[in-house]
Amino acid sequence: MKIPFSPPFINDAVEQEVLSSLRSGWITTGPKTKALEEATAAYSNVSNVLCVNSATSAMMLVLHWFGITKGDEVIVPAYTYCATALAAMHIGAKVVMVDVEEDFNINIKNIENAITEKTKAIVPVDFAGWPCNYDDINALINQPHIKNKFIAKGEQQQKLKRILIMSDAAHSFGAVYNNKPTGCLTDITVFSFHAVKNLTTAEGGAICINLPEPFDNNEVYKTLRLWSLNGQNKDALTKSQAGGWKYDIVYPGFKMNMPDVCAAIGLAQIKEYATLLAERKRVFDFYGEVFTKQDWAWIPPYSKKNCASSYHLYPLRIKNISEQQRDAIIETISATGVSVNVHFIPMPMLTVFKNAGYNIQCFPQAYKNYSCEISLPIYPQLSLLQCNYITDSIIASVNSVIR
Image (tube, rainbow, N blue to C red; front, side):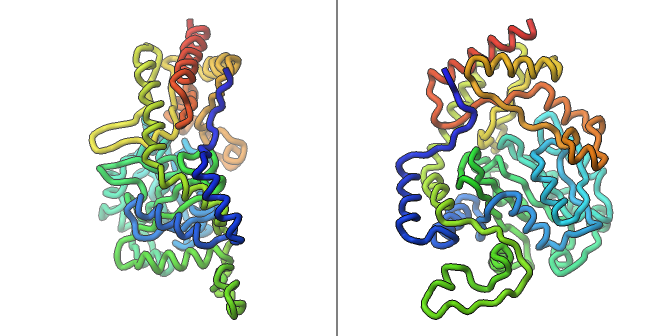
């Protein structure tokens, strides 16, 4: 049996929504992108959402808007996909990596120890769809001794008067923290709608704007939208209207907009997202029921009081094994036709970051999590037969290597 790792969910509704965009004659940014923004805002309990071409672009745009530049520092976890750090690097900031907890998410004490007068933003990551400890993160940056370190530069920093919290929620669309959806837990939340995500637009991302007073979130949305369209004061749809050809470039912006033909995929999916999320939970729960019976299995975090995962990944860890044993287990699983993955190789182990001076020995928990982790297939299309085949393959492969 061949089981892919993470195929996109494409049904008749998705095909019809995309076909509608194609037949409309309008496939770049327009009404479907706006409809997806509004649906995402409603789902996330925020007033304004901007859809762009990727989560990486989204994070770059926000950090740039906040006035972060060369000499500034942005704190990120060492255990995340490279985009979290690259977004800060692309705008010239110094990336300050900190270690994580056993639950894969950023360590709050390590954040506090890393904050300096140069710190302008913190980017916590909801690994695998499990929300970070946002109560403690938000409390930390509002403590007087932390706020006193903050040196504001530019209009936005002077308004906020503290470090910006931008949640990298690439994995956690649909997760819940303290009975609130991810999207409204920090100043800014960024979702990814990449092809392998719970909700996809093939490529894409979204910025949930949740800034406190005195910010006007609608005005921030307008600014970010303008900057995502090369700083052009009219979008293509407006320009196409009769007499609407004349435009101006009022800011040296970026090209980061999401086209309608992509938004159409996400728009169809978000309409039935409750069902898609329930199906992911079904698979997650099945794995949990099977693997809790194995003494070598370390079940990933997924639920506690008033909190729940989005079930984006199933990061199974195998107790008391080496990285080499983990790799051997993956080879054995793959031979059965089951596609698995590893999330993630910690950034300090990647060439770009090693060459910049980061050392994995400074992040022991990140390495420990990585060295024994195997990500299993988890998506709505998996049948009970396939789930049984996957778990049988995992169990047999682990036992063949460790026993």
